[in-house]
Length: 427
Ligand code: DOR
Image 1 (cartoon, rainbow, N blue to C red):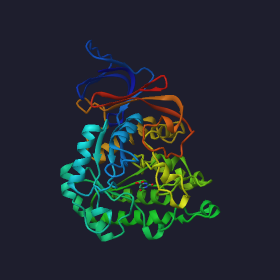
Image 2: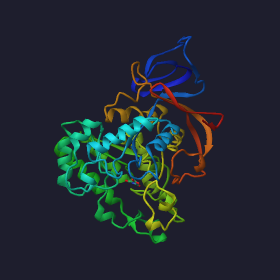
Image 3: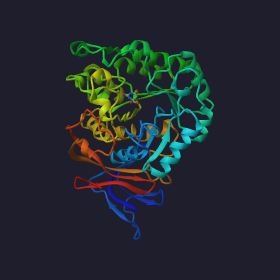
Image 4: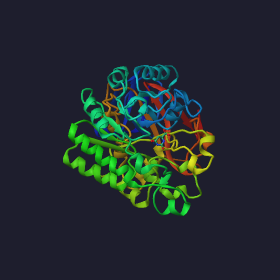
């Protein structure tokens, strides 16, 4: 395969240039100007960005156990349509991915039915119950790239300390879902003016922020790699910024909804805007953007959290937390470029090489010899989010009807085209 005439952006190699890419089998063979190869299938990328395949480090695939929400097949189809060539799946399935058998199941099912790379994340504690450590060594040997009890905070600081200490031997990050369950108990949206007027119980910023500070202290104590998931508040950004300055090994991610929406999206009791941590305020959105800009926030991840209609079209208090995100992430990231928050290079880095480095993957770059995972992006393409066109099995997005600019027009995984659109039509 020969990808010609595109604007190649490869942040890992500081490349932003008009170049051709020759793919042989599953690897990138050559990146240069004017490559000739008569027996290759030529892909004309004129006017398009050719980027390393996007990597999402925070996806809920729901299989095993919740296949009515999403399966490995539909989740990876949604990923490919969103430009992602690799996704890391969270362990809150049923059963929880807290042992080798579940990890192996996910990997073997993904090899058979997945159309992008799937990298499992194992649980920190057995059943994500926050008590005893899960079978971490076994899971890492089976292929887990990190551990997390995502969906719940690890309330016992001693357990979190042991998890951090133990993972040092494997050099994998502990991904913290920072939430103090006592402070957040019963809350369904951000605590503030909007929750008061809606008569809904609020979750204070402090529920996230005290855990961010605690986990930073534990990372400092242990010297282990801490990655903080779905950062949503200004206070969390500031704590991470100062910790990084002190040299603590902490990285973090935010999600497109935290820099695009505020708590006002909940007004009207819109359950598709119910997410955990909750959407915050204008000031928080501003702080998240500053954190992205100054490098405090390393990664943008989707937190793709599919839920079925019956779990969302109910009273706000009872609706599940979460929104799908794989198919809307890229245009929302590109919006940051249009707003001048991030350069295109920096925006792409936060969804490619930065996640690849965190998990030590041979991906996220277009270097010669790297896996041929490539995303071709049309930054000018305008489209409107229509849930009927989304590949995800679930339709719970607050972005329905929103005008987007930019999308993946071709997704290539291991040298194979797994998704392609032409003239606005999906194939
Ligand atoms: O909103 C959320 N949904 N936040 C989480 O942490 C978990 C996720 C889910 O699994 O649905």
